[in-house]
Length: 182
Length: 156
Image 1 (cartoon, rainbow over the protein chains, first blue to last red):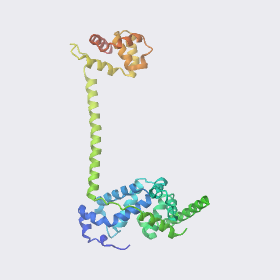
Image 2: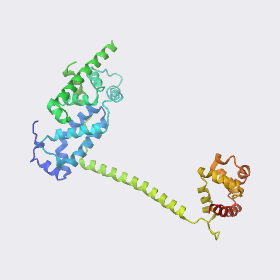
Image 3: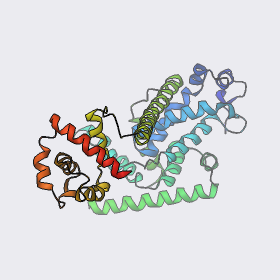
Image 4: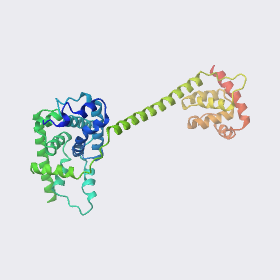
């Protein structure tokens, strides 16, 4: 994984944050938060759940920042790990049908015509949480299999298997949908 | 269905999301602290009520209810009698009434009013109901006093 400026052990903000400086901490994690929020939203399908997870992740990161070792993992990966654990803890289900409909169709008004991407995303919401997490990390974040394995704490083989399951299930669901519509 | 479609679906969805107003860690810490304080306050309130209840019950059960000088206030005594008349005590009260330990019709009426259906079948119910209506009068207080002494005597 590429080492970014914030992950260098000599980063001033990191040193200050480890001493409990809240401003330095804010500065340090600011670039990570927005992408993390989007990832969590895609995983849960619920904006408020994603916000809760991000806030809890920020809190947990601040509390345990002393334990963070930039030599072992990047701050981004570390926070993503915490966020995924938080998501599981909160026992939030993946994108719920009602929430998706509300945000995709109703908000756009009656004239909105759903496109193929909308259908793909809707069908993705029916996949199991473990599969969806892998799908989001792979397709949206464009992480490698190795990186995903590291973030979730599973083997690379399991990542591959979950990706395969996700793709297959998605394909089947979309085909069934097409048949229903015909 | 290819990889590009899946990628595009995620990107489309993420791009339509209104940006998050990133809170500062200081505000999150403040919120957390307030939450803890609130929770503590709730637990303290519950604890205080529980302790008060236990202390009151202890004082009540440990106190000497027989006031030989007759100085106990009527309301307190009445409350004491009523406290003892729980549905579980119905058979005991029933036997007291049958054995003429409690003769006073006012107190019988009060018992009936308090315990409801539990005493419907015992003797003196009808009289009790009639007398119950006058239980607030001063005369009743004197009768209550007598009944109370008899009641406690029987218990001893």
